[in-house]
Length: 437
Image (cartoon, rainbow, N blue to C red; front, top):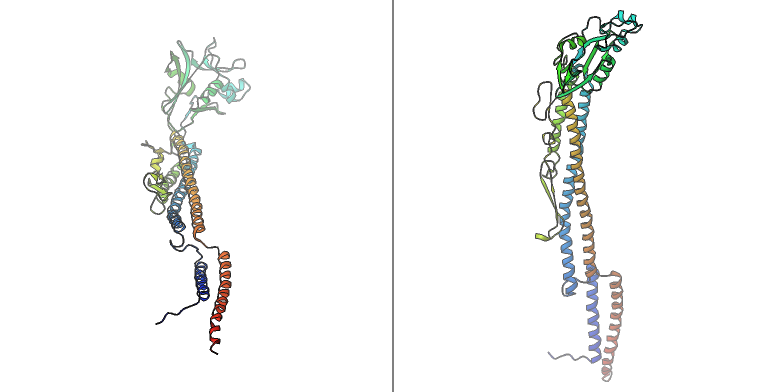
């Protein structure tokens, strides 16, 4: 086939038209994809840089799922701590109820002196009540006055013999606590009552019948005796005991019975205690329980090895036993951290232990809150850095639709002009044909 020969003008215009068409195709592709760099051919530097930025953004996005799960796990443990704290407060309320019901759990010593420590006849002579007459009597039979009976001119005494050596004294014992105080010939029964009340172990009062009553402030067996104190050694004197209490021996007086109210609180206390263990076991999320001693590991970046950035949250095993909360028993001798709910000292020990438990739980909650704050901050940072990476990647490869649209419009115009120019160039060749017309 013979070669078709085009004039230089036609060939130049045809080439221009082909270039315009090619540029139109490229711009149409950019507008269709929204990207000015669609492959490494378009711009290798921008293409591979954008690819790397998007790849890192994708890896960080994948890590956001793990970070979100970590937040939920910590929140589950934190809510568990809050609920356990409420249970411990309920246990405190139970202990307070038990402490408030103490009437049946107080050992009591009452003087059995015939007619009272002051008789009605003495009260008549003193023109006073039987109670006041007893309170105003001297305790020791001394100072040259031997008559025990109160008269109009003498307040009377209780007949306790003056100590030959050392000093007269009263000793009170309850559980492992002992309180001893001395008195002399000027001490009245009122002074004696005030000293007993100051002991913290027992309270004393004189009734309208003139009898002295001493009641333990706790539920431990109570011993109160009168005698002598010589060189720091107390010795009970039977005669002194008889003068004050009408009996020679007041050793280990125990409570008259257990409190029925406290008995009913035993089950309530133990049920609440058991709920602590059950609640802690249910505080997990997605298979990890920070209140069951599990460890939570949260990864924050896409790197490995020494460059890997993560947070390890070590949980602790929360249970009533580990917190130091014993069980309540109804009387008897408790073992370990258990409490005899009928014993005031045990109730005080339980109250102190529960206060310490709340302090420990608050410390654990504070630690979880701090770790949660760290994870939430890293979550926000990761979201922001992912957004930054994507914007940076897009800036390298995305097309400006306004700019590309303007270019396409200009190319369309150029195409039309090229076509006109091509037509004009062709018309020059057609002039040869006219020579044969």
